[in-house]
Amino acid sequence: MKVLQINSVCNVGSTGRIVTDIADLLRKNGYESYVAYGCGKSNEPNSYLMENKLYLKFNILKTRLFGRHGFYNKRTTKKLIKWIDEVNPDIIHLHNLHGHYLNVEILFKYLKKLNKPVIWTLHDCWSFTGHCSYFDYIKCNRWIAGCYSCPQKHEYPNSWFFDRSKKNWEEKKRLFTSLNDLTIVTPSYWLANLVKESFLKKYEVDVIPNGIDLTKFKPIKSDFRNKYHIKGKIVLAVAFYWDIRKGFNYLPEIAKKLGENYTIIVVGVNKNQKRNLPKNIIAISKTNDIQQLIELYSIADVFINPTLEDNFPTVNLEALACGTPVITFKTGGSIEAIDENCGYIVNQGDIKTLISKIKEICEKPKFEKINKCVNKAKSYDKNRQLYKYIELYKIKGNLE
Image: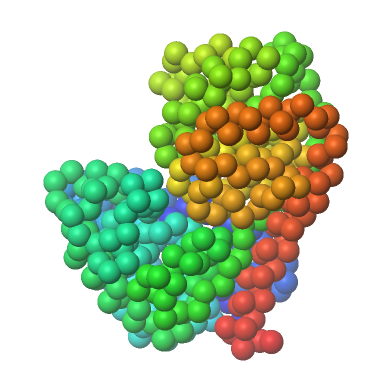
């Protein structure tokens, strides 16, 4: 069985690592794996890089000017199709198709003609909107009946001048509903329920949560407290990037109200965000050092995720696997791995309750909570989740 995956990146970021993890598992089980990706560098075997940096920037500029994200890159996509023909895969597995590297019209017309099983893992909402990747923060539901007058025109994928959301939505609907054999996968039940309200509702939807490597993410000892002379309780917050939608604006307020007996460690902060933070916040830049993250997860008394838009954040799982309880806002799929045994769910923006729950968790010895958190994380073992894809491939490829 040959499986070909298509994604914006390979082996970087959460979606890029999911792609390479699936590829590794395919090879271990005796199957052939191929990966096409939009940009960046990768040593992945049997991989195909679609874009060079100059052409990618040119297509970003076209999106900025004309607002038709996903409908440029004709030359690149035609070359991709030639490569797909050479590989002749049994199954095509799509991931993020946005990212300025692909022409979805050319691709889906080809996939319809090819008439092979297609699996599409949705990592956000872009596939069924006319523009945006998420809409929770602004509470927009125009995507259900048809986008227009997009209130997020200037958000990713940013359009400077034109609102093409109506045309984009109509074209996506026509193209994305044209395939005869398409199975949609989502990492969260939250996103699956949105898909069932969208123009993609005619397709089967499977939920395969993101997983984590439990051989790496587990409680360990660290000298971080001594290094930074921390004596009180530690509250940890981690994001790949921080902005208002990830809840960054809440962090200074939380730090001030908790007071000097609490230290908040925030990972993923840029230079501008580091300015004028309260003294009890330790800001750490974005890091790819997994060992450092594991140390931080392990020493924290509690992990907070004040996100206002999210699908199924793996940071929650990583914290649990390292024995640390999680408090999250009631947002998207962020709540799906959290119960009363391993943390709390708080209404969006309810800082008073969030602080109360932080203090409640920190008043009890952490060792009482470690096993419950670790046991919860075991449900999201990476290999267990990835094998669900292998089983799905077998079903779609008639290899049961």
